[in-house]
Image (cartoon, rainbow, N blue to C red; front, side):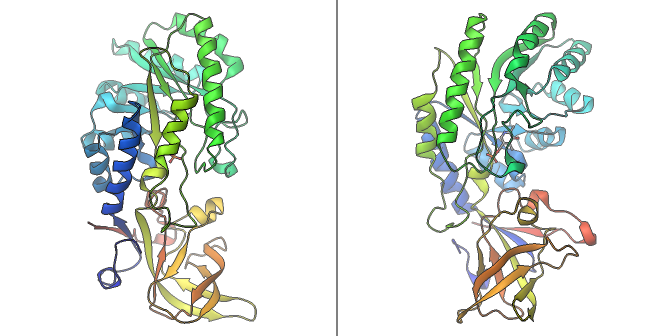
Length: 381
Ligand SMILES: *Cc1c(COP(=O)(O)O)cnc(C)c1O
């Protein structure tokens, strides 16, 4: 484990999420330092984890907020983010959510369809306001990641397609309560191959040319998030390589004078600082498969069931010879499995199990299915 020790962990009822705030600070410091080299603005994507102690750290490190629901905008404001640092994306913003964000005077709506522009214009008009927007463009770039976390292909529901832009520009001329201030992209998540971001830069440059050819100077370029983390080696790479990531955009993005670049990082900032701690309830030995049955399941961490994602699993209590186990939860679903044929030291009832790299899209996706209690969060300094 990072900085957590067994005796401390044993004091808490399982299952629970353990957050290493020390590692979080190191991560945010690194991201801040690298982004500052180029004057880049980083917004934290609240949907990865919206726990208040984590949000406090984001704010203290000077990050803005990237929200995808009205309640996320509320959470950002309740946790002290300034409205002028909040961006709001999402394909299905309700009238209520839009009205709330207008009332707060957020920095920018990232708009995902021509129909949404029309509704936003009407709602802003009713308030006598002009809403600042960025067009979320679907750049048709393949993120080479799991299909459920790919968002920048034409077949995905997100953003406005290139072939629609001409029409959308014409529409914008007629919408008096909307001000176009930028363009926005977000092509997917858990992207570990940086050439994907290079391809994104190429597409952004092409879109910039297109807008200039239409006499539109955009002040803000928002390239979204998506930087991946190392789920296989959380110890060797606890802090993502922000240096290469931001340097790549600096190298390949062609900017015009005065333009500001925005990023929306979620996973890369919080994944490694969170660990799901669980206890072994039962061992079930089969002819071909041994099962280690935990007291945590897909209700606490759904990523393996939802995206077949890998999380490193460790037995913190045993140092015996290794045996293979299917590590499963107690939920009545066959997909409630954290890993198949996982090599673990011989495991017994009561052993503490750590499921690593669970700080992003873990606790936020927990559910009450099977009427399960919500796992607590415990913070370690
Ligand atoms: C989810 C999301 C992000 C953050 O993605 P990560 O892969 O966690 O960095 C950024 N922007 C938008 C619009 C999103 O939906």
